[in-house]
Image: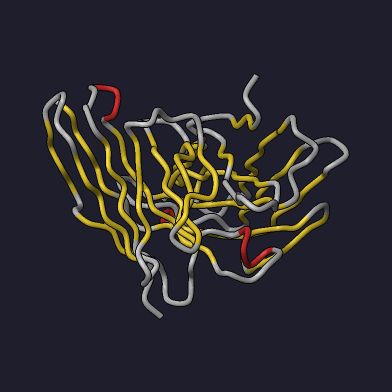
Length: 112
Length: 116
């Protein structure tokens, strides 16, 4: 079993839709949770990070962490064609070696 | 503030050769991590350098090695290249302070390595 599971998609939505992206994980020791956006053939770009359980909002993006269910989500409101990319969830333990454990990524296409 | 930079952008090598990839960390960041991203997969942690010493390693063989320099830039060296080493190699840097600042990492554009 992978430590972090993420539906690879692809997910196709019309412009203006609300998008929900999700990851589940198995290790309760994870402390920090991140979402990265990666355009084709580019490096991942940090969108949001959350420490422990709770919600965090930044513009059209909302990140949620439910540690009791080992489940994290990213919501995108009023989706735009420019949001079309692969979205990667990532987590780490917050210890001395803050290595990131990634999901496989979900490919999102927002249709104009 | 200058972001993470990597060179070269693309590289083609043949099986058995050796390769060196380079990374300059973001200004103010003293920790550098390297990741391998195969096509259609999430990045996999190779190793991390902090204050010029290896500070954690993923499940990669010893032919993957690295260096960090006093200016916090870093190199990834791969010896005896194999076909499966074809991937996007990503460098990420993070701040020296604790908590969330240290946990979050900022990535460069990557070096795409093709092994023939």
